[in-house]
Image 1 (tube, rainbow, N blue to C red):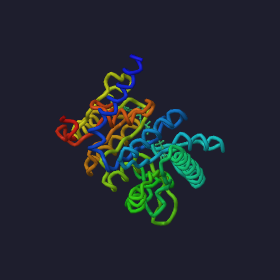
Image 2 (image 1 turned 90 degrees about the vertical axis):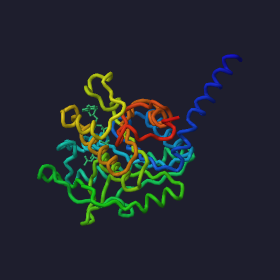
Image 3 (image 1 turned 120 degrees about the horizontal axis):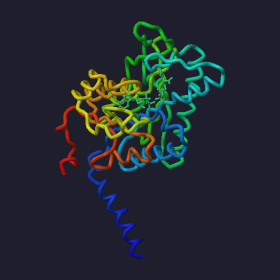
Image 4 (image 1 turned 180 degrees about the horizontal axis):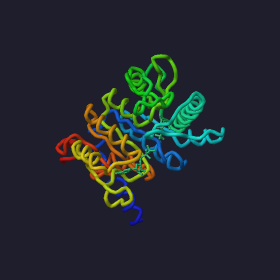
Amino acid sequence: MENYMKEILLKAETLIEALPYIRDFNNKKVVVKYGGSAMLDKKLEESVIKDVALLKLVGMKPIIVHGGGKEISKWLNVVGKEAKFVQGLRVTDDETMEIAEMVLNRVNKNLVQMIEQLGVKAVGISGKDGGTLKVNKKLVAGEDIGFVGDIKEVDASLIDTLLDNDFIPVIAPIGLGYDYQSYNINADDAACAVATAIGAEKLAFLTDIEGVCKDPADKSTLISVLTLDEARSLIDDGYIGGGMLPKIKNCIDAVENGVSRVHILDGRRDHCLLLEFFTKKGIGTAIIDDKKTLYPHESE
Ligand SMILES: Nc1ncnc2c1ncn2[C@@H]1O[C@H](COP(=O)(O)OP(=O)(O)O)[C@@H](O)[C@H]1O
Ligand SMILES: CC(=O)N[C@@H](CCC(=O)OP(=O)(O)O)C(=O)O
């Protein structure tokens, strides 16, 4: 009995600890970029989706922008096509675009299905729906890499309509060109553009590493808070490489354009979103415009 009481008291304390966070983020829009490795494991996927559903049920307005790069590469492989990337972006010919769109739409509806199963309303769209993401063809160092989109305009009206009607929007990174052709968009770019356009309070990137590290091979070098200047210096000093480079550039972009907090979190960790959103120290790396930008709960 004694142990049981201790156990349930601990649960009550955990809920009370979350109170100031629930208050400060009530009705706030939060964008979750869900991709990379956190998608490969069904149990992890369920844990992420449960976190997002809980954010919604405690009064926030979550929006999921998802990737699915590894799944696209898998299906390209099945049809005997090799996946090719230039500076982290997929070279997307006609056939690759068709497969990418099929795979991303399937990932999209699977996520919707999982959210609905938890009794929360969700609607899956791609950037083509309602002309949400309008793009030009992206050239990489002058090179044409096919149907890869560079976001030029975001029409947030469909997303806002869904939020106003209590749905969680789930967005696949496919854009509509001014030529009305489908374009493949890097999901980090899509998440950043969406977060900025809807005036999100937070943007969280779930990835496959603890956060930004001075040495990615040594997790004890994790950096918990990065100001914009510090983030720029890390890039200039060559500490950021690979897929982290466009991610950090997107983070800087989002903060410069009014998103209060951007987080890079380890999507391999169970309930990483709850651990970040509802605890004082948080996990992963937070990118902020200035260390003095505090939420009320941070100074309590
Ligand atoms: N300074 C750094 N800190 C953290 N990760 C880094 C750093 N430099 C390079 N990386 C690499 O970036 C990767 C994350 O980017 P990426 O593979 O594109 O993630 P995702 O597929 O989740 O979008 C990490 O797994 C890591 O290998
Ligand atoms: C142009 C481009 O590279 N598009 C990406 C879109 C998916 C994505 O970004 O997925 P992750 O977030 O899981 O990596 C791709 O085809 O892989």
